[in-house]
Length: 259
Ligand SMILES: NC(=O)c1ccc[n+]([C@@H]2O[C@H](COP(=O)([O-])OP(=O)(O)OC[C@H]3O[C@@H](n4cnc5c(N)ncnc54)[C@H](OP(=O)(O)O)[C@@H]3O)[C@@H](O)[C@H]2O)c1
Image 1 (spheres, helix red, strand yellow):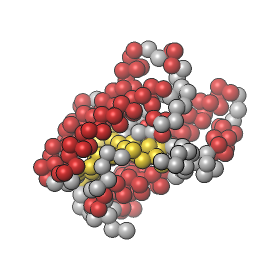
Image 2 (cartoon, rainbow, N blue to C red):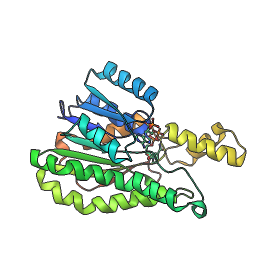
Image 3 (cartoon, protein in one colour):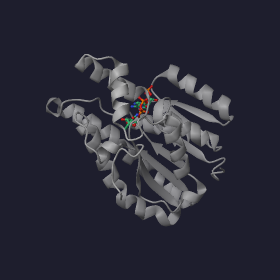
Image 4 (cartoon, rainbow, N blue to C red):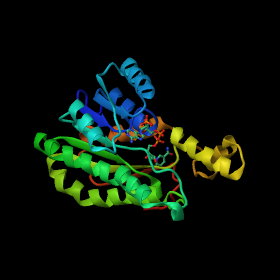
């Protein structure tokens, strides 16, 4: 399927592994020039090599912490006029809410709410002037479906979704869209790390925890990152300009609702 975005420039934050990388791969497959980002140089080198080799597009490598203003400046220096922005970041580690101190709470809110908002502030007017923009925020289904020990992550992402509710409407007439993609359980380093944390707390093997979690999903499996990347690329398509301010759960149906 031709998404009509060949040659478009895309910044994909936190994208050397996992869901961010899957979005970068799908956008590269659609012919976009991509800026990928992460903090670990080894993971960066591997991801950049793979994307160039598979799709032959220009790949800019930005090793930086996206939660910092310097990191954001580095991303924008690599691509001053992006057509596409995928907001992503690591999430706060699972924690009993009683043990969260102020610094941890600030870091969670900065990482998963303020950082994407700052990046939207930086790019949205240029997109509107040029008459094309696609912004996708990776959040989480925990915004809808509470999960213990992830309260900080869920709350920060809920804040982001609320924030962009009106922002997305304010730029829709300029062919700039802002939408949220909400992953359920995907098989990435992050979900493996979370399974490992539960395994050590409950004295079970990681494999047992993963199998048990998969069995409780409606689709009886974890999502594959490439399924998530394909949905992200679809939201960035030239023909997706009428999808505005939506929060789309990609969770294999686990959140049960007819509406
Ligand atoms: N996987 C799931 O099932 C799931 C479900 C719901 C929500 N989510 C959320 O979706 C997001 C992506 O999850 P994932 O599973 O893809 O995670 P992942 O496999 O751990 O990958 C995270 C990626 O983000 C990069 N990264 C992390 N912190 C960064 C920072 N401060 N600055 C720049 N890059 C950073 C990592 O590279 P470096 O470590 O090298 O920086 C890596 O490339 C997270 O916020 C997660 O909480 C995931």
